[in-house]
Every structure is written in structure tokens, then in C-alpha cells.
Length: 374
Image (cartoon, rainbow, N blue to C red; front, side, top):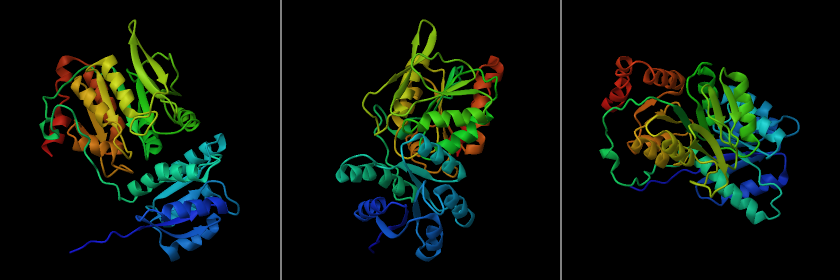
């Protein structure tokens, strides 16, 4: 019996004729897609959706008649689960509107390939950034195990460890802004360790995300800056287009930034941050891998496990895309898996329990054992 894959049906919504043609032509060049229609504003798009029945909508942020935010809010009332990717400019206004769209329920975003001066460059950017996101959101991307040096995933069972946690490191991508908005505001203001975060986002976006989360949270949250000392009760988000690392020197742990080559096609990369916290803190690390596509974080999670630290991941049901956490889980590197609405409580519990009396800390392993028994 031969199975034929049904193409992913896409509706392109943008007020620019040039962008509509560019997106339609580029997406139609991939056999996995079928562009079933276009619309120049939100009102036309909402009228076309029940007729064309797309699997996914690409939605411009700035449009006449009915802009992207208004369109998204109306769309979500009738189609709460339809994947929507916002298509925005890499500007302060575009970034702010995109973050608002994500809060309103957009699945992900891509930045417009403006000012490239070359149609070929613009097409390549769409292929690199937008196409993988569409496939991931529509379930066309499969989990592929990353080769891990020295052992097979099935051999990664280890005795439960209970080091004193001195830092929490979080990695996330697709769906991450909303996931972080669920987790970080629940962290108490007297949280006894620092938090470092990589969220795959370009410049401007990460600063606005940090500002937005800071207003919602009891702990201090800021965009990472070179030389900043890690302190308890403060979270640092890696700035767009910079890898962020933690370096221990003269007793303090400080942030360093660099523009080294991208890893896993990402800068900032989770693997870079995770490796550095494993080197700086050894076993005293709790790593958290949340929703996101791709493999970033798997090799870094292995470094943390090898150093004696612990790794937990967001579960599949609550993830927008179970790529990053799913691969950590499939590679045998996750100590436990939790739904998004339990992550903040679990992070806090693990940190406080690891830093309490030895007798109290000894019961920490129940969630690890419970997870492995499933």
C-alpha cells in the first residue's frame, strides 16, 4: 500500500503584493505545501478561511482595514487551534506588535526579509526561517535523535542525584515567550538562585521580551549584558544575535557575550549556555528545556548530566512544538517531564528542597523515579 502525504494548505495574508507573491512562490516550490489563497487584509482573510480551509495562516502584523492583531483576535474565537505565524518587520514597533500577537495566541513568528537587495536572498531567508516552522507546527517534522558521544540513549539511567542547586538554566524556542510568561511570573521574589535563559529570538525582540516579563514577575528580569554578576532572584535572557555564557571568576559567576558561529543554526544557542553553566557550576545546575523546534539543548543537556546536574523538560501535550524537549526526553537525558502549568512549582520545589537539610533533600528523587517508572 502506498501512502501519499497531503500537502499543508496555507493562506498568505499580507497587504504587500510583492510579499504575497514572494511567499506564495517560495512556499509553492516545496512539495509539502499548497498555497490555497492570499488576502490583502484581515477582513478578507477571515472571510476566506471557512471557504479555503487552510491548515495554517501566515499573517502580516501591519495591514489596512484590519491589522494583524485584530485579525488574530477574531480568528482565535472561531479557530482556537489553527497554527498562525506572524510575519513582521525587524523593528521596535514590529517586535512589540509580534510579542503582543504571541500573547494573543499566535503560534510563532518570522521576520520579513526586507532590505536584502536580492530576491534570491529573500527567498533563502524564507526557506531557512519560515518553512521549518510551518512543518513543525503542522506536524510534518519528525524527531531525530542527536548522536551522543559515549553511550546509547537506553543506557542513560543513573542513580538519582541531589546536588545543591545554585543556578537554573532554561532553553526554549517556538512557543517560548508564552511559556516563559507562564513560568517566570510564578517564581517567588525570594528565589535563592539566579536564572539564565535562552529564547531563540532576534535583536530587539529579546529586550522587549525581557521588559514584558519583568513587568509581570516578582523577580528581576533583564536582557543579558556582558560582565553582569549572577545574583539570586534575578533572571537574565540572552540578547538576540549573541551567545550568552556563564563564566566563574574570583568566586563570582558573570555573563559573557559573543558572536561566535551559530550552533544548531541559532545565536543565541541553548547548547552554548548549557555547556557554560555545566563548567561554571558543575553538578549544581537545574536545566529546563521547554517548547521549541529543533535539536538545540540536547548536547548541552548531556554536558549538564555528565557534570552531575539535573534536567527536566516540558511535556508534549503542553508544548507548541515538542522538538527540543522531545529530543532531550528521547535521548534519555530528562530526569522528569512536566506540563507547563507545573514547571514553575517544580523548579521552585527542587531548588528549595536541594538547599534545605540533608534529611529533607533526600526525598527529592521521587519525581525522577516516578518519571522513569512510566
